Image 1 (cartoon, rainbow, N blue to C red):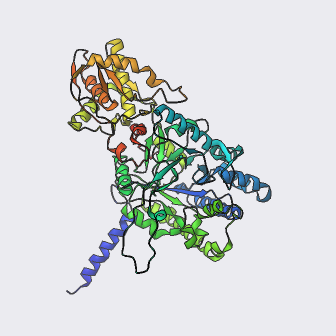
Image 2 (image 1 turned 180 degrees about the vertical axis):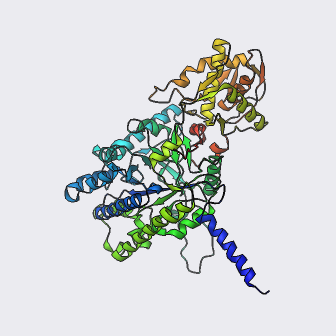
Length: 594
């Protein structure tokens, strides 16, 4: 086949269109927000830590000044251990004064990351038999969380120490954290063997032993839920954005990539939502990524960022996290690949001589070249990319919180609630799993919030004989214990039966005074007319009663499991009966004009 100039022009045009998908926003494409952050948690190799800070902070300021329309800002994540180390070093190098000045001027925001607190294996740890009553497990998790958030530990051994530590120490040094990560509780348990790709081994290859590929017992991290930790966190911080889903899969959850991809899709049903941003336990969450979008290291350069954006679903908002000053900039590649934070892993394993040997570090010329790559990416983003994609810009925690608004405290009309609930139940049909959330009057309601407003509606009808014009969505938790059955599948109840029960349970749903298991949580089981109804069944029955609240109206009882699709696929390691928090999941629409 002969190729003419005409064919070549078509080919070039096609390439231009493909590139245009990245370089310029096509009609209908939503903005991309770039969240800059740096993880500064190495309290041992302080010269390297300080150099990273003295590179990152002025770099962010340069782009804030040269491209004010891009709103450059970065979140610097500190651990409690590194916060204390920098404070002690301040008299020598004034590094703490340096960082605080950039915080004061709004160039950066301070955040907290507890992932690398000393140490990975010696830290406050859950030791659960899973035979404890659910209330007791709740208190055990609270106690371990409280210790992790505030207790000081030896910087190399992790043994208990005097004074403050963790988040409490970090906030005493740098002020309130705007972003909080790494609060996953340590648990003494076992993990199954990792999934490995079996390929033919060359002759003479040693056979791997059970320690390499077998199940392992040790200290791991819980994933998914943190309701008990949030209760303890409230003493120190109630405004921070918390981590959502991790990009990596340290818990070796099967199907992790597919689950996180689909979860992000469920959390972004309309254009003004992002798959990386959602509400859980009344707290705004920011996931590290939602495949195919993943976090990027600035040192990887422009082409890697383009590759990520080229795969993104631009019909909704996207939030891409970009790490500044990653340890890869300083470490030799073969050493950096040994662990996500290789320097601290080395320090904890060699407490007598914890500082990195020089032969593990890159030459100075390579470090300078890495910073040049980072500068090139920020230059491209601030100028070419943002200029060609209207609305796209850098994103701070303060801006994200403002765009998301409040999770609760708004009112929904009874007429709208009835209309949307009726439509949702009709769509549910004979399905045995509930929907994930409901959209009413421009707001998303989680299953727990829906339970609360429906209870308020029917309790008011029981009290006054009429429904209110509107109800307020209040802060509420999911069931502290998740029943695993589908409940009864025969029998009838009347709307009056349901209204009487709602009047009895309504007041506790608004009681936020408990220091243990919350009073304002969805009851795990509801007894009515010799029936044990689970909350999902009660939700359906209340929705039907709202459409016809006449006390004599009969409503058939039908089986229904507790978990919707989002609650089922959210990556988590807790046993089924401890995941009631999934009833608080819902999308977080972002008002980008804010």
